[in-house]
Length: 175
Image (cartoon, rainbow, N blue to C red; front, side, top):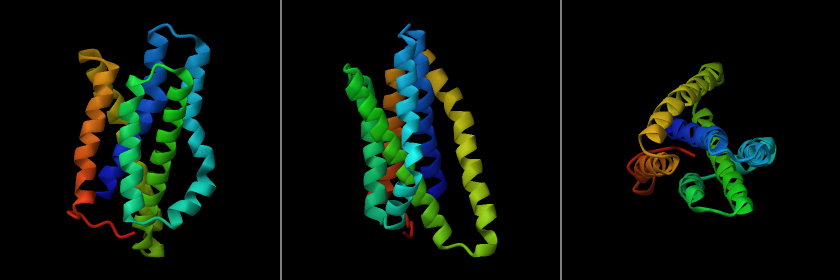
């Protein structure tokens, strides 16, 4: 389940850092907008140390909240017309995604022996890379089939289904 949540975060990152700028480019927006969308999606990753310190103190409730906020912010993006508001929401979603990834990694490593840390890190990286490969294929199809908005709402809806067990104590993530 932790790996599934981690993959979900990878999919959200692909949508915000790749598909939003790509569709903006296809819609003939200027290069400044495309650069800003990409930069604001990636910018949260420079806050690794402060977010890591927060992730070290995280509990299950803060993980649920961060994932839920990431999904809701993602669903809000297509509804926004104001550029600066859209950039702020992309940035905030990126912060929630990165924080969630750090919490999930910490939760997994807290219960692993030191001798298996490398294989655990490798497993998380593999899950993330698989999400990075599968997400463009799936979302490209959804965008071609309907639209970017449809693909974003589909990911948000799927994410809500995936995260729901965290709210009803159906799964155990020891944090």
